[in-house]
Image (cartoon, rainbow, N blue to C red; front, side, top):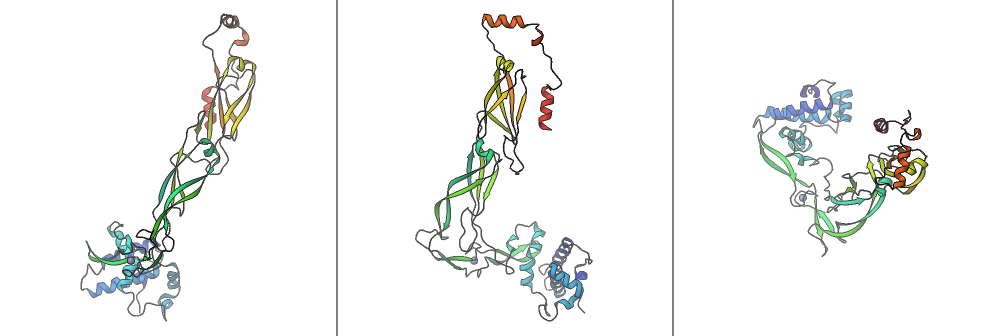
Amino acid sequence: MKEDYYDILGVNKNATAAEIKKAYRKKALEYHPDKNPGDSQAEEMFKKSAEAYEVLSNPDKKARYDQFGHAAFEGGGGFGGGGMNMEDIFSQFGDIFGSAFGGGNFSGFGGFGGGGQRRVKGSNLRIRVKLNLEEVAHGVEKKVKVRRKVQAKGVTYKTCGTCNGRGQVAKITNTILGRMQTATTCTTCGGSGQILDKRPSDADSQGLKVTEETVSIQIPAGVEEGMQLKVTGKGNEAPGNGIPGDLLVAIETEDHNTLKREGDNLHYDLYISISEAVLGTSKEIDAVGGKVRIKLEPGIQSGKILRLRGKGISSINGYGSGDLLVHVNVWTPKELTKEQKEFFERMQGNDNFEPKPEKSDKSFFEKVKDMFS
Ligand SMILES: [Zn+2]
């Protein structure tokens, strides 16, 4: 009678994937052959736990086991008498042992011997793109020249003989638990599993060649200084069947002469004369996408904020646009002619010139509160 997989790992049937993994890791470390040299019982337990984990960590196999027990794996496709061999265990679950040492050192296990081979990725390239406010507001397509490595014309690659195309080689390492087998990146092929076969004269030792290419970058509206965009696959190519790196685009933004950005809103300071404020006027102001003419009613107060809806920056989330907020400033003359001075002196105490703020003329603080609500 074969032992129950749950019993082997010491978990109950409702254990989560994380609990199963944790339990296996504990068992694997406890019965690790390097920790129990010459102990065939420990080795047996080590193999049994690996076999149990192999089933219980795989949702399909676990479901079959839960339904049919060991019968699910009998008659072919099972583990036979010997169960898993050590090589299988290390190659499939090596990362579990690795994490006992803080990870990192043992990360070379991904794909060794087991599933598909790791594909080497070419290096990323970095460029900066400078945008004016106009481009930020509406988004823009930028064409940039990039010098990137690509596989030279006529280059061919063949399977690496050192690692047989796996990209990794087994290595014995001394650890605090004793000697352990780990996988390291094959130094012959650099992990790609392939080496140069035919090297054209203009190619480097990896069969790559630097070329200048024009890459089109779609920059969405609403980006900000310091943001980074990624153009997938436009970095350096990798040798063999590797995948190309990415082009990383750092965004820089130019200040605008008159428009100040705040989130998706833009602010514009408009200065008008006292007579314009009294008589009313119409003014052309800067906006993204061109000038906009706005009308100011007679009697407009200094400090008034006019909101031009949707004339700000398009949101990077795609949810509409910010507004353009025009701050009205009435310019008080510093020098007056004798006549002008006499006029204003005559107006002193005149009822029309007396401040009479209405409820609708909100204070500065209330306006600011409104803007951010
Ligand atoms: Zn190799």
